[in-house]
Length: 324
Ligand code: GLV
Image 1 (spheres, rainbow, N blue to C red):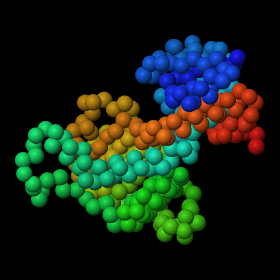
Image 2 (cartoon, rainbow, N blue to C red):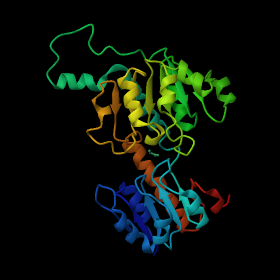
Image 3 (tube, rainbow, N blue to C red):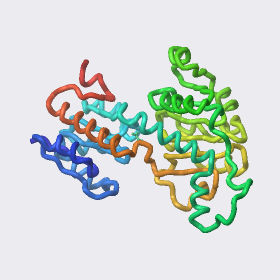
Image 4 (cartoon, helix red, strand yellow):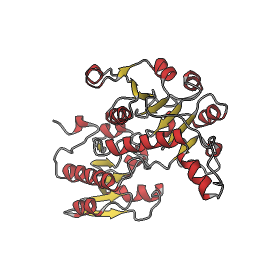
């Protein structure tokens, strides 16, 4: 029986799928599997179900000579050196599609929370500071009819645009691929990056992390944004320069931020950005609904079952290895 190593406890439906005909071993602790344990465990594994916390690189692949598939339980796969996997004929899969709307829901809730002081409002009540109604208390910015600038009009970016439309927002987008079909269909407008930055009340990032997008948001981008603009990042932490963001919000260069991802991640509890009332930070939970996390693990498990059976996985990242 092929050994499958799973780097965290997963939903039972997915585990049952894997257990049919495979020898499955799971890292049961709710913390990242230590690297030495991981490298030891993959020595005889033909498949690994990874999370975005596991780095899959040359060292990992050296330790896993029998590996046929790395099934990442995430749509992003910047934790995996795909070129190296392809060279070594290891299939890589991710979990696109199943988390699109859930992630956009959460990104939009970060936008709302940051615009309207939801989190400091709660803290204020919890800390017994609520003594009277005040016309000046936690006065935020309107979301409805504001301009939403979407950087990256992929699946999640498009869902974000639809949510913005529901709030009568004007939708601008920047992407390396222009989508005139969507512009015609929905009235979304393409803008170059500088125009998007200067015209948007909310800028939301939905690009992959790669060499072009790393630190795409730093001093220069912040200097082009409106002083009141709020930046939302539910993509990957290193797309935004956290220290520069702290300075930009603190100095009033921009209005605030809603982050589900940070750099570093986890963000240390004493990071100064956490002292800012107009910044909301969550611990990388945008896809965390029970339904979506279940679908993500099932999709990752199905990809493993397919590759071990010699079939094409549903969502390959390096399709050149699996044909079709
Ligand atoms: C989560 O961040 C994912 O990429 O699915």
